[in-house]
Image 1 (cartoon, rainbow, N blue to C red):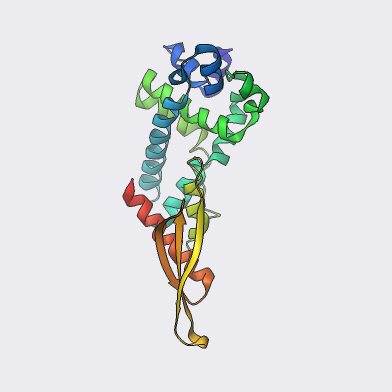
Image 2 (cartoon, rainbow, N blue to C red; image 1 turned 180 degrees about the vertical axis):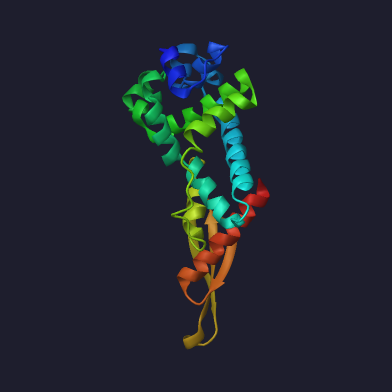
Length: 227
């Protein structure tokens, strides 16, 4: 079974145990191994950073004419849960997952959040097993093979912010009007954007929609600096 998956991802592991760990859901680790640290979650943590770096480097090197906002938006699209889940389905990761009874009952083999995480854990496992080139090979084959800026809009900062936020679980973004100024015919609105209740950006605009876009742009800049 592992050989089939290795053929699908285009990499053969020297240490098969790393790949097995990358496929081990927390339900299996808890119910069968009785050790939550043997799930894929630590590998996922590492894989998320490796994936983000490789994609960012690729976009920076190959699109010198693109501004930061467009690079940020495309990176978010490439590494978001939706895209990674599509990659996982293409590879057939679901059928190789090790799930406990609870994970099976919850439909874990087909849950986008789980199989997307496993893509990242496999990237990390390949990095630990074969070094940077092994991880880059997987990322190049499945993530960077169809890079396109065709759908990117410079001013769609709200969508870009949402896609960045969706990379992590249990994140909530909201917008709140915090002020207005000027006469009725020249009204300027001030909006703040909150992440899990904490302000991460503010913006102004002649309409609430424009103010929200401005706030989202400020939030993206804030999150990039915080990395």
